[in-house]
View 1 (cartoon, rainbow, N blue to C red):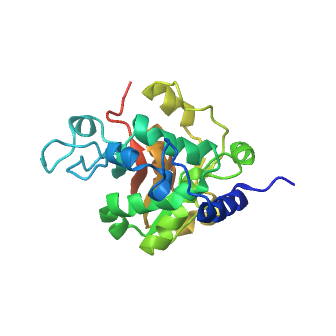
View 2 (spheres, rainbow, N blue to C red; view 1 turned 60 degrees about the vertical axis):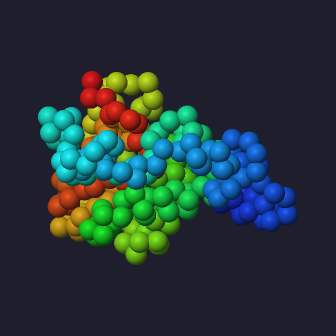
View 3 (cartoon, helix red, strand yellow; view 1 turned 180 degrees about the vertical axis):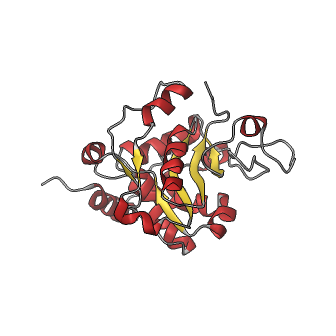
Length: 245
């Protein structure tokens, strides 16, 4: 029987004690499988950001960006640990598609810092779900792998099954903003038996990347339809500009 991704992650950790690990981008790995050079290239969002979508500001203007003011989103606020670019893309995709579950705790630590204001107000942490057919193929949900250690770090209750993807959507890659919104429209649901765990709560939704916000908005609508009083979003990385078209 082929070992699962968690078993392989344990084996990888044991081998790292014997053989110095190579970084994802080449060279000797530092924390999280990245070289020192790669660490220096990651654009962490430590400065002022839009309270609505988390886009970085050059100066702290204490407000929301023009896009959020023009089109309020279904979620209340978003935070990202870093920008999604050539440097951050590789470790994120390694977690998502290459069984690199050892990266999930690292990303959780990033989020515990980047989204600390949202964590302080959250009643529960909920991962963006995968449809069962995609979960069967991938064998794990990368958002859940990040959300679980984040809940442990923060002490915020973790609700892994509070939200489901009831329709097998197409991949969002290559779609416009409007195409992404149509693709996930009505795709998310809080099962009736779990709605009481959402009603009246402030939910922090976890995902790996924020692109147009369509998936996060679809999840937020489903959570608010079940009584959530607030839905915030925390992601590992976000694109520099969230397209609306």
